[in-house]
Amino acid sequence: MASFDWDLLAQQLMPAQINRDQLEENAQLIFPLHDFYKIDEIGMAQLIEASKNIMTNRLEPQRLRTMARKQYLTQGAPVPAVDAPTKPRTPPTEAEVLDAAQRLAPADFLQWQHQRLGTIIGKFEPQTVMSLTQRHALPDSVVNVLIHYLVTNYQIVNQNSMDRTANDWLSNHIDTPEKAFAHIREFLQRNNTSAPGRSNYRRGTVTPKTKQPAWADPNYQPPAAKPTDRSTQAKLAAEMAKLRKNREERTKGGTRS
Image (cartoon, rainbow, N blue to C red; front, side, top):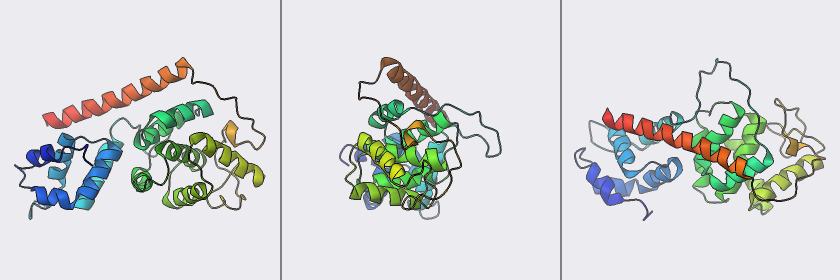
C-alpha cells in the first residue's frame, strides 16, 4: 500500500473533517478500491467526501464501495438500457484474449470483454471480480481468462460460478492464461460437451444459451504459439485509449462540478 499517497489523501480530506485515523481504520477498503478501479488519491478523496455520513462526519464503507462501483460502471463501459437492443459483435479470438489477459488489469478486462460481446456489465460483477483479486489466489492474467470463460458462457460473472471455477483451477495448478485455456478444453472433452451450464462445471449436462467460441469445441486444436501480431496490439491499444479518454473526461467533469 506504500504506492498510494496517504498524505495527499489526508490533506485533500482536511476540509471535510475526515482525519487520518479514519483513513487508517479503513485502509483495507480504500486501497483495494484504488487498486481495482484505478482511482487516484484526488478521486478517492472526492468519493470519500461524497459518501461520508454528514451527521457524524464518519466514513461510510458500504456507501463508499457502492459509489466507487457506480463510478466505474459509467467510465468507458457500454451500459445501455437493459431492454435496449444491442448490436451483436464479433467474439474475441483466443489470441486476442491471451494478449488482453496479459496486458489489462481485471477491471479493464471486464469492460473489454463485455464491449467485445456487445453486452452490459452486471451490477455486482465488478465487486465479484474484486473479491477474487483481493485474495491474490490467481494471477491477474488467469483471472482475466476466468472472466472471459464466465462472460462467454453465462453472460455474467457471478459469485458461485467464479468461486467454483477458481477453486478448480487452483487445485489443478492453473497459473498461466495458456494453462487456463487448455484446462477448459480438457474439461469440455472429458465431459463430452461444448457447453458447460450454470451448475454443471462438475457434471457437464446443460445446453448452452449462447454460441460457443472455437476453443470450446472438444476437437479444437490450439494454434502454435506465436507473438501477438501488430494489428491485434494496435486494436487493443485503441480500445484502451478510448476507455482512458472516457475516464479522464468524466473525471474532469466531476472536478469542474
